[in-house]
Length: 320
Image 1 (cartoon, rainbow, N blue to C red):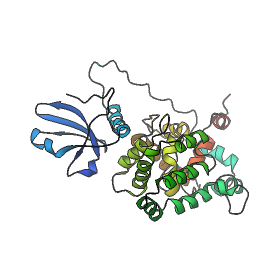
Image 2 (cartoon, rainbow, N blue to C red):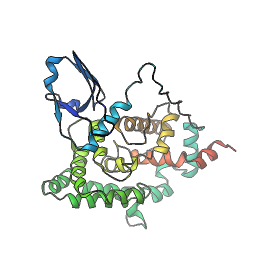
Image 3 (cartoon, helix red, strand yellow):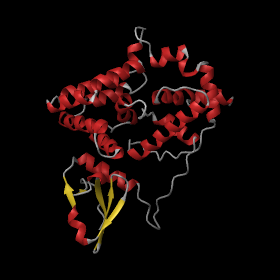
Image 4 (tube, rainbow, N blue to C red):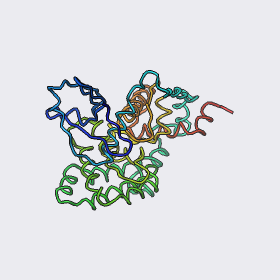
């Protein structure tokens, strides 16, 4: 019979010899078959003579519920189900070309424009530069480097890591909101070791990135749940060319403009993140084709946010 988890954490399983598949939940059990959904997104079935290879493992209750929730979110509704498909989201009334034209009105030289650099990237020694992107990238390289993080974890400095993350959340302009950072600061003390370990795995682990991402989100035991900015800032600071800081309101629009279905969920998850990242990389490519020179995905982030606010769309398209 299927696993159901209305009030208790679900059982979580792992294949004894295929750790790369990640953890799983039991979706269905019949006399001659058990079917599991794994963190890597695959559904796999096993005959009785292979059941012993799927071992129950201990995970925190919130992470077990998180794995189960993702699994059931991706299930196709059963025939005859009353659950209705959502209407496809509406594409914003602006084209990519109009986005570029509007951005060039703001910054005629593009990403090298003096006003852009001063407002977004920051120049050493200038007022306010310590709150902008270049300074933030330097801080992250220093504080979240693999050796420093490993040394702190091996020394059991989980409170120091917690404080370090909080400072990173609050030290960069136009990233996480104060309320998000405060909820992180007030995280239960017994969850802080898990966050440190999950962050280390997120940044430097060997498992597939979707598994690492979802595990990090599950470890963020904050009031009202983790947000997209909280879940994506740190990796974007450490890997600015490869990972994206997500403000979902804007990146949902950007994905739709590029005909990418963001499969959006308000709870941060690897499936949606991969769609946002795909949209960001496609935007980077199109900007380069348009003669622009974004340095990294932080420049792409700023481009998207500057051109897709309601005011920007109205001005860029001449809409009344």
